[in-house]
Image 1: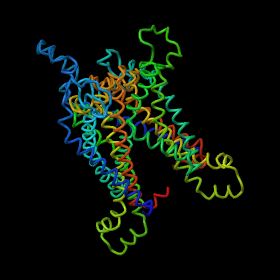
Image 2: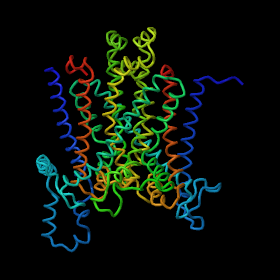
Image 3: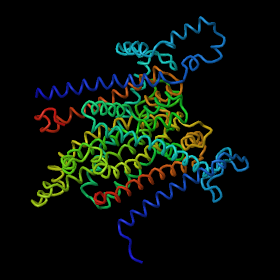
Image 4: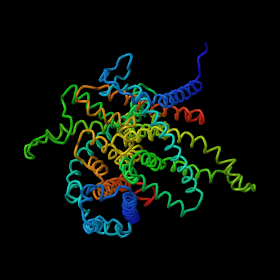
Length: 274
Length: 330
Protein backbone atom coordinates (compact mmCIF):
# COMPACT_ATOMS: atom_id res chain seq x y z
CA UNK A 1 0.00 0.00 0.00
CA UNK A 2 1.33 3.42 -0.84
CA UNK A 3 1.88 5.99 1.88
CA UNK A 4 -0.81 8.64 2.09
CA UNK A 5 0.37 12.20 1.68
CA UNK A 6 -0.19 15.13 4.01
CA UNK A 7 -3.27 16.41 2.27
CA UNK A 8 -4.96 13.02 2.29
CA UNK A 9 -4.11 12.66 5.95
CA UNK A 10 -5.77 16.03 6.60
CA UNK A 11 -8.87 14.88 4.75
CA UNK A 12 -8.95 11.76 6.93
CA UNK A 13 -8.59 13.83 10.11
CA UNK A 14 -11.37 16.15 8.99
CA UNK A 15 -13.69 13.31 8.04
CA UNK A 16 -12.88 11.34 11.17
CA UNK A 17 -13.51 14.29 13.46
CA UNK A 18 -16.84 15.07 11.79
CA UNK A 19 -17.92 11.43 11.90
CA UNK A 20 -17.09 11.13 15.57
CA UNK A 21 -18.92 14.34 16.44
CA UNK A 22 -21.95 13.25 14.41
CA UNK A 23 -21.94 9.92 16.28
CA UNK A 24 -21.90 11.69 19.66
CA UNK A 25 -24.67 14.08 18.63
CA UNK A 26 -26.97 11.45 17.16
CA UNK A 27 -26.10 8.76 19.70
CA UNK A 28 -26.78 11.09 22.61
CA UNK A 29 -30.12 12.06 21.11
CA UNK A 30 -31.34 8.45 21.02
CA UNK A 31 -29.99 7.63 24.45
CA UNK A 32 -31.82 10.56 26.07
CA UNK A 33 -34.46 8.31 27.68
CA UNK A 34 -31.90 5.87 29.00
CA UNK A 35 -29.98 8.70 30.63
CA UNK A 36 -32.83 9.40 33.02
CA UNK A 37 -33.22 5.79 34.21
CA UNK A 38 -32.41 5.40 37.88
CA UNK A 39 -31.64 1.98 39.32
CA UNK A 40 -30.59 1.84 42.95
CA UNK A 41 -29.32 -1.72 42.65
CA UNK A 42 -26.31 -0.43 40.74
CA UNK A 43 -25.51 2.87 42.43
CA UNK A 44 -21.98 4.22 42.93
CA UNK A 45 -20.29 1.63 40.74
CA UNK A 46 -16.74 2.37 39.72
CA UNK A 47 -16.03 2.16 35.98
CA UNK A 48 -16.28 -1.43 34.68
CA UNK A 49 -16.88 -3.03 31.26
CA UNK A 50 -20.67 -2.86 31.65
CA UNK A 51 -20.65 0.79 32.75
CA UNK A 52 -17.64 2.40 31.11
CA UNK A 53 -17.88 5.63 33.09
CA UNK A 54 -19.38 4.06 36.24
CA UNK A 55 -22.70 5.01 37.78
CA UNK A 56 -23.75 7.80 40.15
CA UNK A 57 -25.55 7.79 43.52
CA UNK A 58 -28.90 7.23 41.82
CA UNK A 59 -27.60 4.39 39.70
CA UNK A 60 -27.65 6.33 36.45
CA UNK A 61 -25.25 5.14 33.78
CA UNK A 62 -22.69 7.92 33.55
CA UNK A 63 -21.60 6.99 30.03
CA UNK A 64 -25.11 7.43 28.69
CA UNK A 65 -25.64 10.60 30.72
CA UNK A 66 -22.40 12.09 29.44
CA UNK A 67 -23.24 11.29 25.82
CA UNK A 68 -26.70 12.83 26.19
CA UNK A 69 -25.24 15.92 27.81
CA UNK A 70 -22.61 16.32 25.12
CA UNK A 71 -25.20 15.86 22.41
CA UNK A 72 -27.21 18.65 24.01
CA UNK A 73 -24.10 20.83 24.24
CA UNK A 74 -23.24 20.27 20.60
CA UNK A 75 -26.76 21.13 19.48
CA UNK A 76 -26.72 24.32 21.55
CA UNK A 77 -23.30 24.98 20.05
CA UNK A 78 -24.77 24.61 16.54
CA UNK A 79 -27.45 27.16 17.22
CA UNK A 80 -25.20 29.62 19.03
CA UNK A 81 -22.22 29.33 16.71
CA UNK A 82 -24.51 29.70 13.68
CA UNK A 83 -26.16 32.85 15.00
CA UNK A 84 -22.81 34.20 16.16
CA UNK A 85 -21.13 33.59 12.80
CA UNK A 86 -24.03 35.20 10.94
CA UNK A 87 -23.85 38.24 13.21
CA UNK A 88 -20.10 38.41 12.64
CA UNK A 89 -20.56 38.21 8.87
CA UNK A 90 -23.21 40.91 8.73
CA UNK A 91 -21.57 43.31 11.18
CA UNK A 92 -18.05 42.68 9.90
CA UNK A 93 -19.04 43.36 6.29
CA UNK A 94 -21.23 46.32 7.18
CA UNK A 95 -18.39 47.80 9.18
CA UNK A 96 -16.02 47.56 6.24
CA UNK A 97 -18.40 48.63 3.49
CA UNK A 98 -20.93 51.12 4.87
CA UNK A 99 -18.66 54.03 5.61
CA UNK A 100 -16.88 55.53 8.58
CA UNK A 101 -19.85 56.26 10.81
CA UNK A 102 -21.14 52.68 10.72
CA UNK A 103 -17.60 51.40 11.09
CA UNK A 104 -16.90 53.36 14.24
CA UNK A 105 -20.23 52.33 15.78
CA UNK A 106 -19.57 48.65 15.11
CA UNK A 107 -15.96 48.69 16.31
CA UNK A 108 -17.23 50.48 19.39
CA UNK A 109 -19.74 47.68 20.05
CA UNK A 110 -16.98 45.11 19.55
CA UNK A 111 -14.79 46.87 22.12
CA UNK A 112 -17.73 47.07 24.46
CA UNK A 113 -18.54 43.35 24.27
CA UNK A 114 -14.87 42.44 24.63
CA UNK A 115 -14.51 44.74 27.63
CA UNK A 116 -16.74 42.72 29.90
CA UNK A 117 -15.17 39.34 30.76
CA UNK A 118 -17.02 36.64 28.81
CA UNK A 119 -18.33 34.70 31.77
CA UNK A 120 -19.61 37.83 33.46
CA UNK A 121 -21.43 38.94 30.31
CA UNK A 122 -22.92 35.45 30.01
CA UNK A 123 -24.13 35.70 33.61
CA UNK A 124 -25.68 39.11 32.90
CA UNK A 125 -27.43 37.98 29.71
CA UNK A 126 -28.61 34.78 31.32
CA UNK A 127 -30.00 36.85 34.18
CA UNK A 128 -31.69 39.20 31.71
CA UNK A 129 -33.41 36.22 30.06
CA UNK A 130 -34.54 34.76 33.36
CA UNK A 131 -31.93 31.96 33.22
CA UNK A 132 -32.55 28.59 31.57
CA UNK A 133 -32.12 27.29 28.02
CA UNK A 134 -33.05 30.55 26.28
CA UNK A 135 -30.53 32.51 28.31
CA UNK A 136 -27.68 30.17 27.41
CA UNK A 137 -28.37 30.21 23.68
CA UNK A 138 -28.84 33.98 23.50
CA UNK A 139 -25.86 34.56 25.78
CA UNK A 140 -23.45 32.36 23.85
CA UNK A 141 -24.68 33.74 20.50
CA UNK A 142 -24.27 37.34 21.57
CA UNK A 143 -20.78 37.01 23.04
CA UNK A 144 -18.84 35.00 20.46
CA UNK A 145 -19.15 37.01 17.26
CA UNK A 146 -16.63 39.73 18.08
CA UNK A 147 -13.31 38.19 17.02
CA UNK A 148 -14.73 36.72 13.80
CA UNK A 149 -16.37 40.06 12.98
CA UNK A 150 -13.00 41.77 13.41
CA UNK A 151 -11.37 39.23 11.14
CA UNK A 152 -14.00 39.65 8.42
CA UNK A 153 -13.86 43.44 8.70
CA UNK A 154 -10.10 43.37 8.20
CA UNK A 155 -10.36 41.02 5.24
CA UNK A 156 -13.05 43.03 3.47
CA UNK A 157 -11.12 46.26 4.03
CA UNK A 158 -8.07 44.66 2.49
CA UNK A 159 -10.08 43.18 -0.38
CA UNK A 160 -11.61 46.54 -1.22
CA UNK A 161 -8.15 47.87 -1.93
CA UNK A 162 -7.05 44.82 -3.91
CA UNK A 163 -6.07 45.48 -7.53
CA UNK A 164 -8.48 42.96 -9.04
CA UNK A 165 -11.45 44.39 -7.17
CA UNK A 166 -10.59 47.90 -8.29
CA UNK A 167 -10.11 46.67 -11.83
CA UNK A 168 -13.52 45.00 -11.74
CA UNK A 169 -15.05 48.31 -10.67
CA UNK A 170 -13.27 50.23 -13.40
CA UNK A 171 -14.40 47.68 -15.97
CA UNK A 172 -17.96 48.57 -15.08
CA UNK A 173 -18.90 45.53 -13.04
CA UNK A 174 -21.72 46.38 -10.62
CA UNK A 175 -20.91 46.49 -6.92
CA UNK A 176 -23.16 43.56 -6.15
CA UNK A 177 -21.64 41.44 -8.88
CA UNK A 178 -18.13 42.34 -7.72
CA UNK A 179 -19.01 41.32 -4.21
CA UNK A 180 -20.56 38.05 -5.37
CA UNK A 181 -17.95 37.06 -7.96
CA UNK A 182 -14.76 38.31 -6.33
CA UNK A 183 -15.29 38.81 -2.62
CA UNK A 184 -17.47 35.89 -1.53
CA UNK A 185 -15.15 33.19 -2.91
CA UNK A 186 -12.31 34.79 -0.98
CA UNK A 187 -14.22 35.18 2.27
CA UNK A 188 -16.16 31.94 2.33
CA UNK A 189 -13.29 29.63 3.35
CA UNK A 190 -12.29 31.92 6.20
CA UNK A 191 -15.87 32.24 7.28
CA UNK A 192 -16.41 28.47 7.33
CA UNK A 193 -13.22 27.86 9.27
CA UNK A 194 -14.12 30.64 11.69
CA UNK A 195 -17.57 29.12 12.12
CA UNK A 196 -16.18 25.70 13.04
CA UNK A 197 -13.59 27.20 15.35
CA UNK A 198 -16.42 28.98 17.19
CA UNK A 199 -17.83 25.65 18.29
CA UNK A 200 -15.29 24.69 20.95
CA UNK A 201 -15.68 28.10 22.60
CA UNK A 202 -19.45 27.93 22.43
CA UNK A 203 -19.53 24.42 23.89
CA UNK A 204 -17.07 25.15 26.69
CA UNK A 205 -18.88 28.36 27.61
CA UNK A 206 -22.23 26.61 27.63
CA UNK A 207 -20.80 23.98 29.98
CA UNK A 208 -19.21 26.65 32.19
CA UNK A 209 -22.33 28.74 32.55
CA UNK A 210 -24.45 25.67 33.25
CA UNK A 211 -21.85 24.55 35.76
CA UNK A 212 -22.24 27.87 37.60
CA UNK A 213 -26.00 27.35 37.78
CA UNK A 214 -27.18 29.90 35.20
CA UNK A 215 -27.75 27.59 32.29
CA UNK A 216 -29.76 24.46 31.78
CA UNK A 217 -31.91 23.27 34.65
CA UNK A 218 -30.57 20.61 37.04
CA UNK A 219 -33.00 17.95 35.75
CA UNK A 220 -31.45 17.99 32.30
CA UNK A 221 -28.46 15.72 31.76
CA UNK A 222 -26.21 18.59 30.66
CA UNK A 223 -22.49 18.24 30.99
CA UNK A 224 -22.23 21.28 33.25
CA UNK A 225 -24.88 19.83 35.56
CA UNK A 226 -23.06 16.48 35.69
CA UNK A 227 -19.81 18.15 36.66
CA UNK A 228 -21.33 20.46 39.24
CA UNK A 229 -23.11 17.48 40.87
CA UNK A 230 -19.88 15.53 40.87
CA UNK A 231 -18.27 18.23 43.03
CA UNK A 232 -20.27 17.12 46.05
CA UNK A 233 -18.99 13.57 45.67
CA UNK A 234 -15.34 14.36 45.04
CA UNK A 235 -14.40 14.27 48.71
CA UNK A 236 -15.92 10.78 48.95
CA UNK A 237 -13.46 9.47 46.41
CA UNK A 238 -15.91 9.14 43.49
CA UNK A 239 -13.40 10.42 41.01
CA UNK A 240 -15.02 8.89 37.95
CA UNK A 241 -18.05 11.18 38.18
CA UNK A 242 -15.88 14.17 37.27
CA UNK A 243 -12.97 12.68 35.37
CA UNK A 244 -14.62 10.94 32.40
CA UNK A 245 -17.38 13.43 31.50
CA UNK A 246 -14.78 16.21 31.57
CA UNK A 247 -12.35 14.23 29.44
CA UNK A 248 -15.02 13.58 26.84
CA UNK A 249 -16.02 17.26 26.88
CA UNK A 250 -12.40 18.32 26.33
CA UNK A 251 -12.09 15.68 23.61
CA UNK A 252 -15.18 17.01 21.84
CA UNK A 253 -13.86 20.57 21.94
CA UNK A 254 -10.49 19.35 20.67
CA UNK A 255 -12.16 17.47 17.80
CA UNK A 256 -13.91 20.63 16.66
CA UNK A 257 -10.52 22.31 16.71
CA UNK A 258 -9.07 19.48 14.62
CA UNK A 259 -11.96 19.74 12.17
CA UNK A 260 -11.58 23.51 11.85
CA UNK A 261 -7.82 23.46 11.43
CA UNK A 262 -7.98 20.60 8.90
CA UNK A 263 -10.58 22.49 6.90
CA UNK A 264 -8.34 25.55 6.94
CA UNK A 265 -5.45 23.50 5.60
CA UNK A 266 -7.64 22.04 2.86
CA UNK A 267 -9.15 25.35 1.75
CA UNK A 268 -5.99 27.40 2.17
CA UNK A 269 -3.11 25.05 1.43
CA UNK A 270 -0.54 27.77 2.09
CA UNK A 271 -1.43 27.77 5.77
CA UNK A 272 -0.47 24.10 6.12
CA UNK A 273 3.19 25.06 6.11
CA UNK A 274 3.02 27.34 9.08
CA UNK B 1 6.13 64.32 23.16
CA UNK B 2 3.06 66.52 22.95
CA UNK B 3 1.39 64.18 20.48
CA UNK B 4 2.04 61.36 22.90
CA UNK B 5 0.09 63.20 25.60
CA UNK B 6 -2.72 63.79 23.12
CA UNK B 7 -2.71 60.09 22.41
CA UNK B 8 -2.90 59.22 26.11
CA UNK B 9 -5.69 61.73 26.63
CA UNK B 10 -7.70 60.31 23.74
CA UNK B 11 -7.28 56.78 25.09
CA UNK B 12 -8.37 57.89 28.54
CA UNK B 13 -11.51 59.56 27.22
CA UNK B 14 -12.28 56.51 25.12
CA UNK B 15 -11.92 54.28 28.16
CA UNK B 16 -14.27 56.43 30.24
CA UNK B 17 -16.88 56.49 27.46
CA UNK B 18 -16.61 52.72 27.10
CA UNK B 19 -17.10 52.29 30.84
CA UNK B 20 -20.23 54.45 30.72
CA UNK B 21 -21.54 52.31 27.87
CA UNK B 22 -20.77 49.12 29.78
CA UNK B 23 -22.73 50.37 32.76
CA UNK B 24 -25.65 51.36 30.51
CA UNK B 25 -25.60 47.94 28.82
CA UNK B 26 -25.35 46.11 32.13
CA UNK B 27 -28.14 48.19 33.62
CA UNK B 28 -30.30 47.53 30.58
CA UNK B 29 -29.69 43.78 30.88
CA UNK B 30 -30.64 43.57 34.54
CA UNK B 31 -33.67 45.78 34.06
CA UNK B 32 -35.18 43.68 31.26
CA UNK B 33 -34.83 40.63 33.47
CA UNK B 34 -38.14 38.94 34.18
CA UNK B 35 -36.91 38.27 37.72
CA UNK B 36 -39.18 40.42 39.93
CA UNK B 37 -37.01 42.12 42.57
CA UNK B 38 -39.85 42.07 45.10
CA UNK B 39 -40.55 38.37 44.61
CA UNK B 40 -36.86 37.55 44.71
CA UNK B 41 -35.91 39.60 47.74
CA UNK B 42 -38.99 39.82 49.93
CA UNK B 43 -40.48 36.45 49.14
CA UNK B 44 -43.95 35.30 48.13
CA UNK B 45 -45.08 34.52 51.69
CA UNK B 46 -44.03 37.87 53.10
CA UNK B 47 -45.64 39.71 50.19
CA UNK B 48 -48.92 37.92 50.78
CA UNK B 49 -49.12 39.07 54.39
CA UNK B 50 -48.39 42.72 53.57
CA UNK B 51 -50.89 45.52 53.18
CA UNK B 52 -51.28 47.37 49.89
CA UNK B 53 -49.51 50.45 51.25
CA UNK B 54 -46.49 48.43 52.38
CA UNK B 55 -46.22 46.81 48.96
CA UNK B 56 -46.51 50.20 47.29
CA UNK B 57 -43.75 51.49 49.55
CA UNK B 58 -41.51 48.56 48.71
CA UNK B 59 -42.27 48.99 45.03
CA UNK B 60 -41.14 52.58 45.30
CA UNK B 61 -38.01 51.49 47.17
CA UNK B 62 -37.05 48.95 44.53
CA UNK B 63 -38.02 51.28 41.75
CA UNK B 64 -40.68 48.99 40.29
CA UNK B 65 -42.88 50.85 37.82
CA UNK B 66 -40.46 53.75 37.54
CA UNK B 67 -39.07 54.18 34.01
CA UNK B 68 -35.70 52.50 33.52
CA UNK B 69 -34.12 55.74 32.39
CA UNK B 70 -34.72 57.63 35.62
CA UNK B 71 -33.68 54.58 37.66
CA UNK B 72 -30.45 54.43 35.68
CA UNK B 73 -29.75 58.11 36.21
CA UNK B 74 -30.34 57.77 39.95
CA UNK B 75 -28.07 54.73 40.12
CA UNK B 76 -25.38 56.28 37.96
CA UNK B 77 -25.26 59.56 39.87
CA UNK B 78 -24.95 57.63 43.15
CA UNK B 79 -22.32 55.40 41.59
CA UNK B 80 -20.37 58.42 40.45
CA UNK B 81 -20.24 59.68 44.03
CA UNK B 82 -18.93 56.30 45.16
CA UNK B 83 -22.22 54.96 46.47
CA UNK B 84 -22.89 51.71 44.61
CA UNK B 85 -25.98 50.93 46.63
CA UNK B 86 -26.58 48.30 49.29
CA UNK B 87 -25.89 44.66 48.54
CA UNK B 88 -29.12 42.76 49.11
CA UNK B 89 -27.44 39.51 50.10
CA UNK B 90 -24.64 40.82 52.29
CA UNK B 91 -26.71 43.71 53.71
CA UNK B 92 -23.70 45.99 53.46
CA UNK B 93 -22.73 48.73 50.99
CA UNK B 94 -21.67 47.24 47.67
CA UNK B 95 -18.46 49.27 47.68
CA UNK B 96 -17.46 47.63 50.98
CA UNK B 97 -18.29 44.11 49.80
CA UNK B 98 -16.37 44.62 46.56
CA UNK B 99 -13.37 46.08 48.39
CA UNK B 100 -13.06 42.99 50.60
CA UNK B 101 -13.53 40.58 47.68
CA UNK B 102 -11.18 42.57 45.51
CA UNK B 103 -8.33 42.28 48.01
CA UNK B 104 -8.86 38.51 48.12
CA UNK B 105 -9.00 38.24 44.34
CA UNK B 106 -6.18 40.54 43.41
CA UNK B 107 -3.42 38.33 44.83
CA UNK B 108 -4.81 35.31 43.11
CA UNK B 109 -5.25 37.14 39.81
CA UNK B 110 -1.87 38.85 39.98
CA UNK B 111 -0.03 35.61 40.73
CA UNK B 112 -1.78 33.72 37.92
CA UNK B 113 -1.32 36.65 35.54
CA UNK B 114 2.42 36.92 36.18
CA UNK B 115 3.08 33.18 36.09
CA UNK B 116 1.06 32.56 32.94
CA UNK B 117 2.54 35.62 31.24
CA UNK B 118 6.17 34.78 31.97
CA UNK B 119 5.82 31.05 31.38
CA UNK B 120 3.79 31.60 28.21
CA UNK B 121 6.33 34.07 26.87
CA UNK B 122 9.32 31.81 27.60
CA UNK B 123 7.66 28.70 26.19
CA UNK B 124 6.44 30.59 23.12
CA UNK B 125 9.86 32.06 22.40
CA UNK B 126 11.57 28.72 22.93
CA UNK B 127 9.12 26.90 20.66
CA UNK B 128 9.35 29.58 18.00
CA UNK B 129 13.14 29.55 17.94
CA UNK B 130 13.42 25.77 18.01
CA UNK B 131 10.66 25.30 15.47
CA UNK B 132 10.05 21.71 14.41
CA UNK B 133 11.98 20.16 17.30
CA UNK B 134 10.48 18.13 20.12
CA UNK B 135 10.37 21.27 22.31
CA UNK B 136 8.19 23.00 19.74
CA UNK B 137 5.94 19.99 19.39
CA UNK B 138 5.61 19.63 23.16
CA UNK B 139 4.71 23.30 23.69
CA UNK B 140 2.27 23.28 20.79
CA UNK B 141 0.68 20.04 21.90
CA UNK B 142 0.31 21.26 25.46
CA UNK B 143 -1.19 24.58 24.37
CA UNK B 144 -3.69 23.02 21.98
CA UNK B 145 -4.70 20.43 24.56
CA UNK B 146 -5.22 23.03 27.30
CA UNK B 147 -7.15 25.30 24.92
CA UNK B 148 -9.90 22.70 24.67
CA UNK B 149 -9.88 21.83 28.35
CA UNK B 150 -12.52 23.65 30.38
CA UNK B 151 -10.86 25.55 33.26
CA UNK B 152 -13.43 24.40 35.76
CA UNK B 153 -12.83 20.75 34.98
CA UNK B 154 -9.09 21.23 35.35
CA UNK B 155 -9.79 22.80 38.74
CA UNK B 156 -11.84 19.73 39.70
CA UNK B 157 -9.06 17.37 38.63
CA UNK B 158 -6.40 19.31 40.56
CA UNK B 159 -8.69 19.39 43.57
CA UNK B 160 -9.13 15.63 43.27
CA UNK B 161 -5.41 14.92 43.02
CA UNK B 162 -3.91 17.36 45.51
CA UNK B 163 -6.65 17.90 48.07
CA UNK B 164 -8.58 14.64 48.14
CA UNK B 165 -6.10 12.02 47.03
CA UNK B 166 -2.68 13.30 48.17
CA UNK B 167 -4.18 15.56 50.86
CA UNK B 168 -1.31 18.02 50.77
CA UNK B 169 -3.32 21.14 49.93
CA UNK B 170 -6.59 22.48 51.39
CA UNK B 171 -9.89 21.92 49.57
CA UNK B 172 -10.96 25.54 49.45
CA UNK B 173 -11.53 28.97 50.99
CA UNK B 174 -8.88 31.63 51.33
CA UNK B 175 -8.17 30.95 55.03
CA UNK B 176 -8.51 27.89 57.28
CA UNK B 177 -12.06 27.33 58.54
CA UNK B 178 -12.90 28.49 62.06
CA UNK B 179 -9.76 30.49 62.65
CA UNK B 180 -9.60 34.00 64.07
CA UNK B 181 -8.65 36.64 61.53
CA UNK B 182 -5.49 37.51 63.48
CA UNK B 183 -4.38 33.88 63.62
CA UNK B 184 -4.22 33.56 59.84
CA UNK B 185 -0.62 33.63 58.70
CA UNK B 186 0.67 34.55 55.29
CA UNK B 187 1.67 30.92 54.79
CA UNK B 188 -1.97 29.87 55.30
CA UNK B 189 -3.14 32.36 52.70
CA UNK B 190 -0.55 31.19 50.22
CA UNK B 191 -1.38 27.52 50.79
CA UNK B 192 -5.02 28.24 50.09
CA UNK B 193 -4.27 30.20 46.94
CA UNK B 194 -1.89 27.65 45.37
CA UNK B 195 -4.49 25.45 43.67
CA UNK B 196 -6.68 28.25 42.24
CA UNK B 197 -3.62 30.14 41.04
CA UNK B 198 -2.16 26.98 39.53
CA UNK B 199 -5.38 26.28 37.61
CA UNK B 200 -5.53 29.80 36.24
CA UNK B 201 -1.84 29.75 35.29
CA UNK B 202 -2.03 26.40 33.51
CA UNK B 203 -4.93 27.56 31.37
CA UNK B 204 -3.55 31.06 30.84
CA UNK B 205 -0.19 29.86 29.51
CA UNK B 206 -1.55 28.17 26.38
CA UNK B 207 -2.93 31.22 24.57
CA UNK B 208 0.11 33.40 25.24
CA UNK B 209 2.55 30.63 24.30
CA UNK B 210 0.78 29.91 21.00
CA UNK B 211 0.67 33.54 19.90
CA UNK B 212 4.23 34.30 21.00
CA UNK B 213 5.36 31.23 19.07
CA UNK B 214 3.70 32.51 15.88
CA UNK B 215 5.31 35.94 16.23
CA UNK B 216 8.68 34.37 16.97
CA UNK B 217 8.43 32.20 13.84
CA UNK B 218 7.70 35.32 11.78
CA UNK B 219 10.75 37.00 13.27
CA UNK B 220 13.00 33.98 12.74
CA UNK B 221 12.02 33.94 9.06
CA UNK B 222 12.81 37.63 8.57
CA UNK B 223 15.74 38.93 6.57
CA UNK B 224 17.47 40.54 9.52
CA UNK B 225 17.63 37.25 11.39
CA UNK B 226 18.91 35.51 8.27
CA UNK B 227 21.60 38.17 7.98
CA UNK B 228 22.46 37.82 11.68
CA UNK B 229 22.88 34.09 11.16
CA UNK B 230 25.08 34.73 8.17
CA UNK B 231 27.26 36.93 10.36
CA UNK B 232 27.60 33.97 12.66
CA UNK B 233 25.61 35.18 15.64
CA UNK B 234 24.62 32.53 18.17
CA UNK B 235 20.99 31.71 18.90
CA UNK B 236 21.21 33.53 22.21
CA UNK B 237 22.58 36.70 20.70
CA UNK B 238 19.98 36.58 17.93
CA UNK B 239 17.30 36.39 20.59
CA UNK B 240 18.91 39.08 22.73
CA UNK B 241 19.60 41.55 19.93
CA UNK B 242 16.84 40.92 17.41
CA UNK B 243 14.17 38.55 18.68
CA UNK B 244 13.36 40.00 22.07
CA UNK B 245 12.87 43.60 20.95
CA UNK B 246 10.48 42.58 18.23
CA UNK B 247 8.49 39.99 20.10
CA UNK B 248 8.01 42.07 23.23
CA UNK B 249 5.44 44.43 21.67
CA UNK B 250 2.90 41.78 20.69
CA UNK B 251 3.68 40.04 23.99
CA UNK B 252 2.63 43.16 25.91
CA UNK B 253 -0.64 43.32 23.97
CA UNK B 254 -1.30 39.66 24.68
CA UNK B 255 -0.36 39.93 28.31
CA UNK B 256 -2.74 42.81 28.97
CA UNK B 257 -5.49 41.36 26.82
CA UNK B 258 -5.31 38.19 28.91
CA UNK B 259 -6.58 40.07 31.98
CA UNK B 260 -10.12 39.61 30.74
CA UNK B 261 -9.60 35.86 30.30
CA UNK B 262 -7.91 35.42 33.66
CA UNK B 263 -10.77 37.27 35.30
CA UNK B 264 -13.32 35.12 33.48
CA UNK B 265 -11.45 32.00 34.55
CA UNK B 266 -11.34 33.22 38.12
CA UNK B 267 -15.14 33.34 38.21
CA UNK B 268 -15.23 29.57 37.64
CA UNK B 269 -12.18 28.69 39.68
CA UNK B 270 -13.18 30.75 42.71
CA UNK B 271 -16.56 29.07 42.63
CA UNK B 272 -14.99 25.60 42.72
CA UNK B 273 -12.47 26.34 45.45
CA UNK B 274 -15.04 28.46 47.36
CA UNK B 275 -12.44 31.22 47.28
CA UNK B 276 -14.23 34.39 48.44
CA UNK B 277 -13.22 36.75 45.63
CA UNK B 278 -14.88 39.00 43.07
CA UNK B 279 -15.75 36.11 40.75
CA UNK B 280 -17.59 34.24 43.43
CA UNK B 281 -19.39 37.44 44.40
CA UNK B 282 -20.58 37.79 40.79
CA UNK B 283 -21.99 34.25 40.76
CA UNK B 284 -23.65 34.65 44.16
CA UNK B 285 -25.13 37.98 43.07
CA UNK B 286 -26.44 36.53 39.81
CA UNK B 287 -28.06 33.53 41.44
CA UNK B 288 -29.46 35.52 44.35
CA UNK B 289 -30.73 38.41 42.14
CA UNK B 290 -28.52 40.86 44.03
CA UNK B 291 -28.71 43.50 41.30
CA UNK B 292 -26.61 46.27 42.90
CA UNK B 293 -23.74 43.86 43.62
CA UNK B 294 -23.91 42.32 40.14
CA UNK B 295 -23.78 45.76 38.53
CA UNK B 296 -20.94 46.82 40.80
CA UNK B 297 -18.82 43.76 39.98
CA UNK B 298 -19.49 44.18 36.26
CA UNK B 299 -18.42 47.82 36.17
CA UNK B 300 -15.35 47.18 38.34
CA UNK B 301 -14.20 44.22 36.24
CA UNK B 302 -14.77 46.15 33.01
CA UNK B 303 -12.71 48.98 34.51
CA UNK B 304 -9.90 46.51 35.23
CA UNK B 305 -10.02 45.17 31.65
CA UNK B 306 -10.06 48.63 30.06
CA UNK B 307 -7.36 49.76 32.46
CA UNK B 308 -5.26 46.86 31.21
CA UNK B 309 -5.76 47.86 27.58
CA UNK B 310 -4.88 51.45 28.41
CA UNK B 311 -1.70 50.36 30.19
CA UNK B 312 -0.72 48.28 27.17
CA UNK B 313 -1.19 51.29 24.89
CA UNK B 314 0.92 53.45 27.20
CA UNK B 315 3.64 50.81 27.47
CA UNK B 316 4.03 50.70 23.68
CA UNK B 317 5.40 54.20 23.82
CA UNK B 318 7.83 53.29 26.58
CA UNK B 319 9.05 50.15 24.86
CA UNK B 320 9.09 51.20 21.23
CA UNK B 321 10.95 54.42 20.29
CA UNK B 322 9.21 54.46 16.90
CA UNK B 323 5.82 54.87 18.54
CA UNK B 324 7.20 57.35 21.08
CA UNK B 325 8.50 59.63 18.35
CA UNK B 326 5.77 58.94 15.83
CA UNK B 327 2.98 59.95 18.22
CA UNK B 328 -0.39 58.27 17.94
CA UNK B 329 0.65 55.66 15.43
CA UNK B 330 -0.54 52.21 16.41
